[in-house]
Image 1: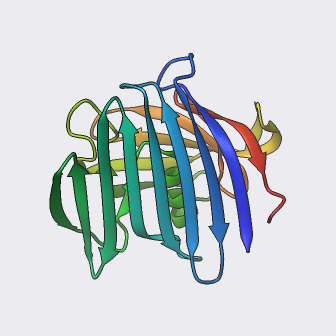
Image 2 (image 1 turned 120 degrees about the vertical axis):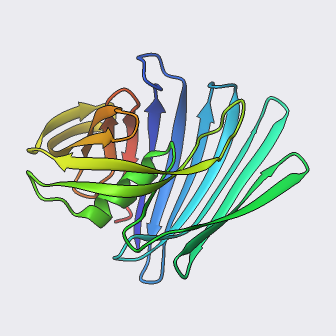
Length: 216
């Protein structure tokens, strides 16, 4: 079994921390399981619990569960990938709405959590100098309105040369450097990961505060 755990500091496009994300990854021969707790001040003080499961080696997403509690609000998202469709339920207060969208084997998933970037990096397996455009089912983050709305977007990742990176969790002498682009909105940022594709720094969004790889 592979066990990794850590914590990211979240800055949400600025320099002042707006929250943290504590996470734990367990990988067995049967399943990959991520558990994450996100504690954020924006758009209002709230706490999210996130669970993602995926197929080992392929890193294909199977299930996504997200719940959010804060400011008197209680919202949840639960989705399952099966037979070329992603079926999901969005719950708010006493109301639950069900949806289903078609997806392919190459469809990626994204949400405002760094675990989704790690899953995508494992699936893309980019070599230095390579780039790839992808279709992504993007789950909108907790917001004042339309939390967990889902939309298909286009993104691209490019891997540049490896380089040293220093973050609060330590010094990484040979971090992978990626450039992420949202091809619909124009958002561009750099992401650095270690050899296990754990995000060390996401420019304008996060830094790794702590990291435990002793269970590997």
